[in-house]
Amino acid sequence: MGAARWLSLGSLLALAGLLQGRLVRQEEAGFGECDQFFYAGTPPAGLPADGHVKICQRAEGAERFATLYSIRDRIPVYSAFRAAPPAPGGAELRWLVEPQIDDPNSSLEEVTNEADAVTSVKNLGSKQALNTDYLDSDYERGQLYPFSLSSDFHPTTFALTNAAPMTPSFRERWYMNLNSLMDQALTPQCGDGEDLYIITGAVPSDRKVKDKMTVPEFVWLAACCAVPGGGWAMGFVKHTRDGDVIEDVMVKELEKLLPFNPQLFQNNCGETEQDTEKMKKILEMVNQVQDEERMVQSKEGSVPLSSTRSKKSALLPPEALEERSSFLRKLMGFIATPFIKLFQLIYYLVVEILKNIVYFLWYVTKQVINGIESCLYRLGSATISYFMAIGEELASIPWKVVKVIVKIIRAILRILCCLLKAICRILGIPVRVLLDVATFPVYTMGAVPIVFKDIAMGLGGTICLLFDTALGTMGGLFQLVFSVCKRIGYKVNFANSEEL
Image (cartoon, rainbow, N blue to C red; front, side, top):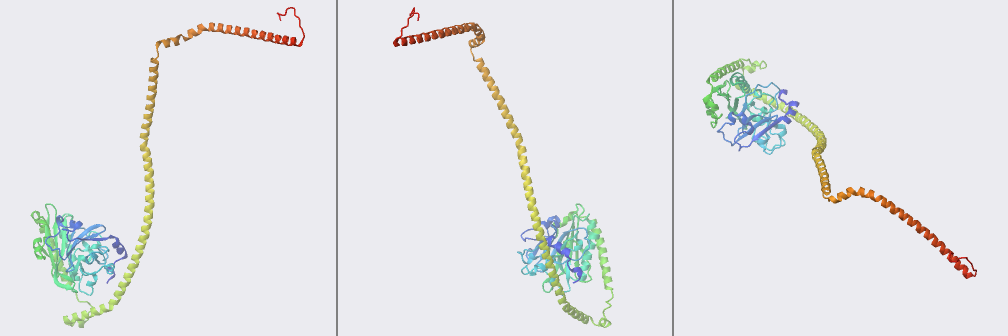
């Protein structure tokens, strides 16, 4: 396998995080989120549900296209998508598988590498085609929705559920037809292509690859332009036989060619309002595409044989040449198989090592991010708590001001109440008491002389009492002395004893 067919490291890392598919449950009427790729949001009607799997192909978190896959033939019945500007060219990616088709309980991504699914998916390949089914065969994986028609990097177009067995020459012409039809005929006649709905499909034949995959008898394309007042619908068929060019048919005729005669577009894409002039222009461009394909085929037929073929081999009959080329191909395959297997083993080991390194780095990064998130969470919680406390205080200030005002008003009311009580008590005192209070100073001044007089008389009486006391005391002492002397025997004569 060439180097261009191997997955680059950047693409491998991108696939680990960007690819997402979704198997739609059979009991659902449509394709879920992928109903947007069908006209009026309605998938083709009339196809049996048994043996078919509905797949909503996703990439980078968005729906890309829808696929109805046949687990019996192991090829897609059809893929539906919207017209988009062509994608830039790039290296071919590794083909992908849907693990949930074979093992609904698989924990892998719904679109993943076959190497990752081999060891973990039970019965891998029992209901779908694998890369190994194409080895040592004359067929290659042909996309119904080619990568070149997607608007950007769509790895899901490389899912094996979007591929059918095609010969290299037929696949090349099929891609060329699709690109030419989209660029020259379909998109220019449908505004900017936003209202253009495309369904590409494959009809199985009785031929199989390794008794597993069914080779298509022909592939087809149905287009519906839903521009109001200027819509149209066209169909195209391309047989897998060499030399056949793509054919234009009406959608109703195409439906008759398909198994079970399904209705591809609801209400036949509004056939009552279709613009016949645009359809004529499309047919003119289709004729040019057919002429271009015939010219390419004629040029391919006129290419001389390889210079490496000897003259002897050129003279051999076709049967001998075919037998010899088959023997050489088998011999080269036998010699190259061990090297290919060794290279695949080395590649698988390198991929697993890189994957484990990426997982380890992702784990370390996740732990660091979790630590930073925890710190930020705590800081945010503390900040929020702080601002909430400040907010509560600010919110309580008006209430506190109201409480203070209420207390001031209550104090003022109490003062007024006390003043009223004092006034009431003053008003309740009798008039006589007031007169007595008023005349108190007059009576007081009139009584002052009398008081002084009484004081003087009191002082005179006190003095007289003191003299009387002193004289009485002295008389008593003399009487005592006289009595003592009398008893002792002394006689005292006085001229007048009574005076003593």
